[in-house]
Image (cartoon, rainbow over all chains, first blue to last red; front, side, top):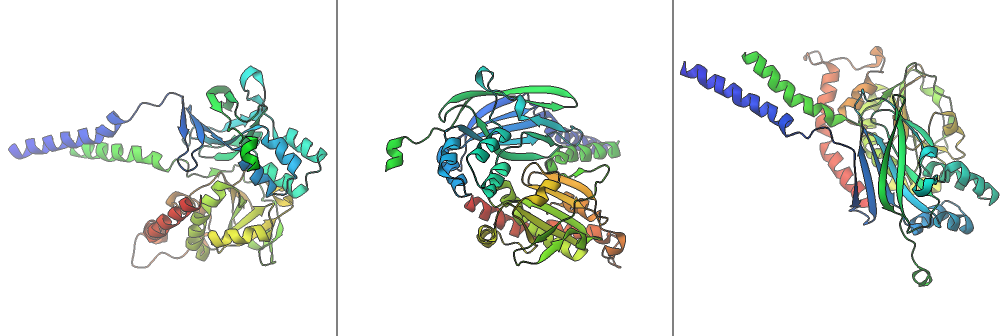
Length: 205
Length: 211
């Protein structure tokens, strides 16, 4: 009898142990946005997560933009045109499980303060053609920018630059949206600060 | 009662673990579209036609040296290649928009032994359903796109290897060892989990240093 009660007790303990991860596990997280410093580079970054997606905006320094595109054959005037705008390295991830459904993203629907749209790939490419940017450089540009329209199956993610019609150093609220199961959903990252440019004094040194 | 508790215990331990592999999946294509053909030169000037690989499983990976997730997944792709090449699986890494002079130094930092093909004019990638880099397609032995992965993956993970191996025609799969009931898949999976842990840790540390 005593042996039996020990067994029963043992199974109760095991049962509680088994349940503990569930008891300790957080409830499905409500959407939230947070600011952090990228440990590797020291730049500011923002992450919004919830509703089975995550979006990260990571500051991209104008000098990074200059170096990257000059190395890919962009002429200086075109590079300066780009570097005079706010650029974020952008990472979007469909974090939903296998039944979560495909996410449809269209950057044309995203807005910053005062309803301004992002500057999209097509608009830049028109400028580059007018400015005579060589084709290999335009190819590099095409794949460096975040696609305007993209579908993300569960587990899919992508990384690319998004560009905004404001100067480096500006702080913006980014209102973004996505569609899943036909339903349009929204989120906002508030107070994202575009990386400032170095001042001219620093540049001439 | 005892069985009930045991089942509860096992399920409760395993359920949270099921989410561990999230993000390491491939999207199955239904129906499977025909993979657009191509003829591209590799780093040594040899021309590879996709049609040359009919009858094999082919991973077609679109990438560029400047793309961080592309760089990050390369070591795992090389490890996957080492496990899969004897099973008639091919990896073709199609570089987009860059020349040999740009790619060559990259291969010093990220040594890979599968062919790197050059799509310098981006004519090929335009014919494939690619919007961002990296994107990888798994082409079945009939030349159809069976799976797609947008964004980087850890290609030598057991789940992805199992999915890729599932496309290998039965006559090309290695026979199960005669003395074991586990079968080749089981043997491969066990070996996959064990043999490259040290290499993986080393390569990931190497990647972190290079970033």
